[in-house]
Image (cartoon, rainbow, N blue to C red):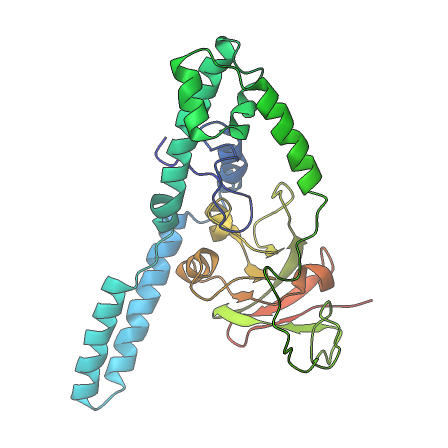
Length: 298
């Protein structure tokens, strides 16, 4: 399995050794592949080829409309340089982040299963409560860390109830003047109940059904507009079937934005409140050029 090391949460780009990889949970792959069993769905390779042709056609049209040969030459030079040095591919995150973490998890899990067989661990997941030097020591000699594991689990439950302090260290006695109070839990400059703005990450306009997704894509159908807090590599295989993309978070250069542009999917990111304000199942209009989303209310 070439991409068996993919891990991380369903949304966002955080890569963590705690999450099972595709190799461990092949059913995750089938959940993504099931959409492409529909004969009406265009293959991702075909979509990429068509979009690439459209981009090349647009480039040639722009050059033909320009009468200044020097500008055309400089434009082509800069474009070639950008394509070489700033290319962002769908698989780049896999090779940069996912593969290394997935392989590390595979090694740790194999060690965990062996330690379970030796009755050193009661279950494989207990290994994540140990330090690496403790894992190595347990592999070399029959050392039990049962007491340490129980203690650390108890500490973790206690720490989960703690709130982070407002600052670390000694505060500056000369505090700046307190700014005017404002409600940071609702959008600033909100003028319309049926409108939200963000940053256009992939140009184009589309209309479709909004699906508010957290950790599951089971109810998603081709043409739906995915509305989520964020999206990472684990969900990008479904991008070719999406009608549009709307995210609370995100950045113009992140994985989801780059893949949306690759498949020509209108996308608006950085809306902050899309998952809170857009009704589930509503017909919404996504304008990835202006960075706006319109939706019904009431």
